[in-house]
Structures are given as structure tokens and as C-alpha cells.
Length: 580
Ligand code: HEM
Image (cartoon, rainbow, N blue to C red; front, side, top):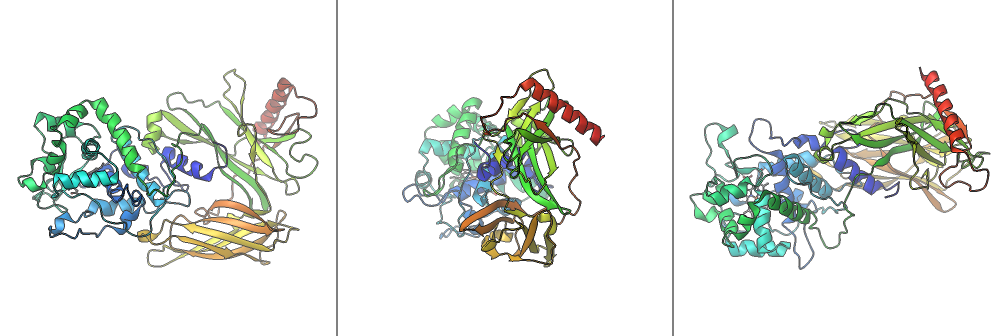
């Protein structure tokens, strides 16, 4: 992993933080293993069933179908069968609720299908099941796939054939059904011929597959012990006992193995991962996503109150039960222009965070919770002289425990700012809301282009796939025009474009074409445009000398580390004095 990697950064952020960039959390809609208010319906069970039904369209021979979010277009699907309405294969209010839960979380780098996969990973971990290894990069279908979901009234041969087509053997089918049917149950509203409704709709209209609401192997042990009340095993109408036919199809050999809780847990981790990774053969998934121990987020050169500023956050982790409140995190950076360009003279600028650190508690994501770590975000906002600008930055972390401070510099390369010709100015941009639900938005986006540079074209690429009712994503380019009603500021002149959007996760890439090269400011967020409070103003920028930048010049005097440390500490002391 090297920064920047917007895809990996986005997937990792969602897995361990459970939320969107604007703070809205998807994991906590379900975590810790919640039921829908006023019902017995397990939200995690609904998310898991939705994922399987999306996967169920896969055909291993043609390489088509699989986890591609086509389920959003398959909800009203009925099999061409004489079966009653209750066997509509994707029928169920749980499906509708789940799609509503997921609707606003997809982004340019988190496909709708990846969000569905995250839902299963969160749900299983949150309810006490194994951690399913997560890969991202699924590609969304924008229409229905062929039919393929199994139904309870079908016979065993049909089920074996359906699972074979999806890529699972008979033994894997038995295990996968057990791994699925450890959560949730059957509703009378969806399957009235399996569950009869009673007087108290909150309790009577739902029958759980086993006696626990956790992701455990009670569905297996109760079956093996003969005490199960699983409605798909004990229904009086034998035709609908699909779990019984499947579980007993190898004389219960697989079920007896799964009665060992460790076997159950590891089997489910493997099979559910394979289920989530069942994608069309044209899709290549990423490597498994693991935590980035020290992560740069939200790096942005921008204009606020007529000043050029650079803001970013540096995310560290620490054990929840061993917090270090003394840690000092310092940012360093080099100029892009002038005599100290790229720190050639080893004069390095440095600053402390603009605010006290922000902490992600482990309750935000069940995956983070399992690590026992908190995520701690150190946020920096520093003024930048437009004549000097900024070419790269890096960090130093001093735990104040007697050990030497540790440098984080993107594996020796520094965190490089690719270009400063075109920048995004969210504080000069605006948004107006319209429509009955105020979901229709009109944005006026403002980009700054460095004074003295006249691009042959300035434009932006807008992307939003978090559309109401899973409508087609917005994915279009918009020309930006020079706007002389906004006075030049901080070495920049301004260009604007108007973009209409009905989704909720619009991001923009800004482009300036200069001398046939396209300079791009990628993946800029739009949710904080309406905020008008100025960024915190730091007063703590100092200059330290004799510091080698990450891939800086090798010539020149080699610095003595202790002298450097002394200078940094004195600089920090000065900064702290200024701040207080
Ligand atoms: C032959 C295969 C299968 C059949 C016939 C079947 C059938 C059913 C039925 C009839 C329900 C009740 C739905 C409702 O009332 O809303 C259900 C629920 C569920 N199924 Fe399956 N299923 C099968 C395989 C699977 C697999 C492979 C998984 C996942 C790995 C899975 C996960 C679930 C979950 C989690 C629920 C509970 C949903 C909730 O409580 O809202 N099922 N299944």
C-alpha cells in the first residue's frame, strides 16, 4: 500500500470506520446485532439474505451474474411457476428495508455491490460470527440478471443443481444454508403457508430458525439433537421443508461436522467469503483489505477566507484499553517553489494539529471492535504562502515514552501533492435544495486555477451512484467557465460549473488542460459545501532546519538527529505557547 490509493483508502475506511465520509454510519444501523424496532426481524439476517439472493443469479459456466447489486431490479420477480404468491423468490419486506439501508452509502470507489458485501461482513461479525475477509472492486449491474434464487417448495435435485450452477458442491450447499439460517427466520407476511400469523404481529408473525439470535451453530445443534423448531424443517407441509431435505441429504454427515462450533465458524468464514466473492467473471477483486496502520485522509489544498490553506488528517490506531494522551503528532512539509523548493536547503516547515484528536470508538464498526483498537484522527490545517505552495508532507509521531519519535513518510517517498494548478474551493461553492423531499440539489462548483496559467480547457467529472431507488448513476463531464465575479485570491482565479444531482454521494474530479497535459484534482467531496464556519486557524507553523525530506537531495551536510530534535522541540514549545 502506498498513498494515494483512493480505492483502497475508501474500502479500508468503510470496513474499519463503518461510515461515509460525511460521518453517517452504516454499520451502526445494525451493530450491535439489532432487530428492526418493534419487530423480531434481525437487520443482519436481512442483509445476509439480500446478499445471497444477489449472488444466486451466478452461473459458473457462463461467468455471468453474482454479487453485482442487480437485486435492486429483481425485487418484484416471480418465478414462472404456478406456486402461490408466497414463493415469489425475492419476496420480502426485509429485502426492501435492506436496500433502503444501503441506498446512500455507495460512492465512486464503493460500488453498490461492495456495500451489499460490507453489509454481510458487518452483520456476521456484529452477531458474534467470524470475521469474513473482505475484498472490494465489485462492479454494479444496472438491470436485472437472469433468475436463480432457490425456493422452499423445490425438490432436492433442483437445489443441488442450483447450487452447482452457483459454484457450490452439495456439501457446501448444506453448510452455506446452515450458515445463512443461523440468523433470522421466516415471516408470515412473506410465507403465510409456512408461518401462520397470530394476534400480536410483533412476536407471532415471525419464526426464528433457532433459539438464539446470534451467529452461532444452534441451528445445527438443535437440528442434530432433534429439538429444532426451524420452520423449514418441521413444517406440517413436507413440500416446504427445504432445510430438512438439504440438511439430511448426506445422511446428516455434514451437519454432524458443523455441530463443532469451531468447524462451523471456520466453514462459514470460508463459504460466506466465497459467496461474497462470487462475481461476474469480468470483475477482478482487490486484495483482501487490511488496516492501514498510519493513514493520510482528506488531504486538500484549498482556499478559505481568501487564504490558501492545506488541510489533511493523519489517522493512527491504538489499543482501546491503553490510550496515550501524551502522544505528539507533527506534520512537516516542503515548499513547491522558491529557494526552499522541495526542501533543497533542508529548511522544513512544521505544525501541530489544529484541534485535539478525534477518536473513532470501537462501537462504530464491528470489524474495528474485534481488533480492540481505536482510530485516532489528528487533523491539520496550515496556511500556505501561494508563492511557496507545498510539494510534499510527512509526519512524525512521538509517543513521549522515551523511545525515538517515529517518522511516517509513505515508505520514504513522502506524501506528494501531485499538482497545485487546479484546486477545489468548496468554501466558495454553493448548493441549493429543491423538490418535495428536498433531495434534488443544484451545485455551483468553484475551482481555483493558478494565476498566470491559462488552461485550454477547465472541466469537472461528476459521479454519484447513491441515487434514489437505485436509478442510473450520474456520470458526466461539465465545462467550467472563467468567472470574473469572484475576485482572484491567494494566487488563484476562479472557474465555475453548475451540476444538478438527485443522489447523495456526489464527488467531483477537477481537470485543467495545460499544454496538452490534463492536471486533475481527484475525488473531491461535496457534502460539506453548505458549512460556512471557517476552518480552525492554526498559529503554530514554524521552520526547522537541517531536516532531510523523504526523497530529498542526498547532497549537503548530513544532519545530526539530536540537533534536529532539539530544534523541533523548541519549535513545538513556541507553538504551544502561541496557542495557549
Ligand atoms: C435452498 C436454499 C434456500 C432456501 C429455499 C431458503 C429459503 C428461505 C426462506 C423461505 C426464508 C424466509 C424469508 C422471509 O420470511 O422473509 C429464508 C430466510 C433467510 N435465508 Fe434462506 N434459503 C436458502 C438458502 C439460503 C442461503 C444460502 C443463505 C445465506 C448464506 C440464506 C440466508 C437466509 C437468511 C439470513 C434468512 C433470514 C432473513 C430474515 O430473517 O429476514 N438462505 N430463507
